[in-house]
Image (cartoon, rainbow over all chains, first blue to last red):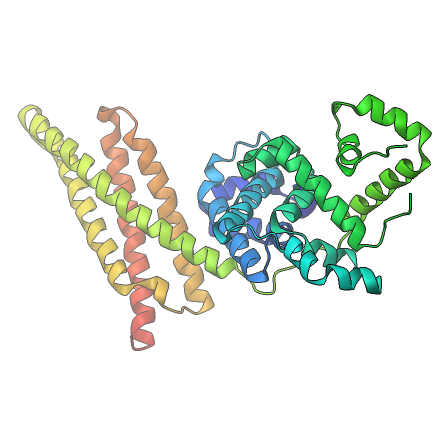
Length: 178
Length: 200
């Protein structure tokens, strides 16, 4: 991905390691979009996602000397971003808002057969479920990796993913009669 | 017929063989409903991946940059202080030894000590100016940044020289500390000129 986002990644990283500010800014400009997108999909608010963006790149600037080029640059930055976003969730305390929302308006939704679009349905998931869905289905992390980042078990990640998909299916009106 | 649970369907998408996967696949072959459910799951994931990317409303680079600069200055001050202590000890030792053996060879450690002291004075002057709290025009900010980058490079070289053999490092130390002082002098000039220009 970095060859697409940052054509001369090797030279930019080398200059960034020397502390050159223009190179650090080039890293920021190349990866701010994907980092923000990841953070915004996990965090509840835009403000939280922007804070994660800032924290991620501050860490990237501080630690670029420790990046060993064993994996991809984007993979390294993405893991920092995911960790920061999950840390933000822990700081804000997990909120199972989808369950609360179900109790409040579930009946109404069933009665009106209102279909939500995918963006709205994703937004409505609890923070933990949404984080697992995004990290697993979109970013391609394994359940073991997600469990490691969340400080939970792989089984926890698997059951969150299954519950999230069951809810998405219902909210998107995809259920079929058996 | 008992259909596959969502947990089983989600597990079927994993690369490895989940427990019970063989039986689940057997069921899939015979059950059109579960095949349709799995297909919907695949489509949902494909739609998730195709969601339009979200972009930040504000540029956060200036905030990142300011924190990096502040951190760099703190590290520099800490580095100058620590290496100052270490170097002061080795300079004192070198002075004692060289004065006994070759009086003229004691000049380099003494010069290093003087240059380091000058460097600390200039660091304090920059701290008093507090550049992070000031707004610079683009050109001045560019010059200040170039100087900051070069000081950071000199600091990295100094760290490397500190690891070399004592007998070969004095001339390198003196050269680098002098370069550092020259750069700090220029940086003070940049900030002081700007400060007086805007009447601060």
